[in-house]
Image 1 (cartoon, rainbow, N blue to C red):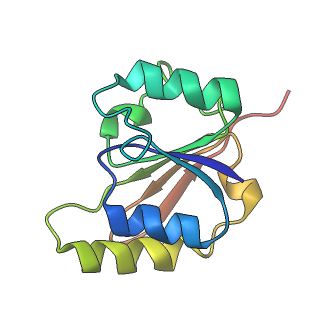
Image 2 (tube, helix red, strand yellow):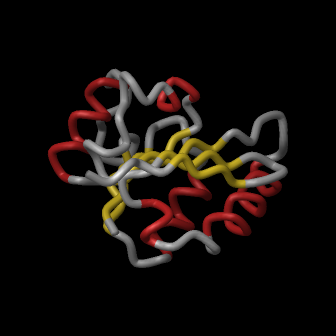
Length: 121
């Protein structure tokens, strides 16, 4: 699984993703901080990476189709300590399958996970 971690993602979440032995491209660690959402999306599409972000703009599927990239995971866990955010993220993300992620829009909130599946064909 190939992931691009947006620069607004907390470092412990990026570390968690890396610990899963994923191919994680961190926007921050790759010195790409400041690139636009469109540029993040272009990289994800070109390399078929799943975007993991805290940026709600990526829920706009007419602009950022998860089907064109590897998929999009939007972490909507705000106004919590970093350790709480990480715990919630880990609990939900660890239960997602590759099929749940691939070319779909996944929203993770403190209360649930929502998956908007891309239509096949």
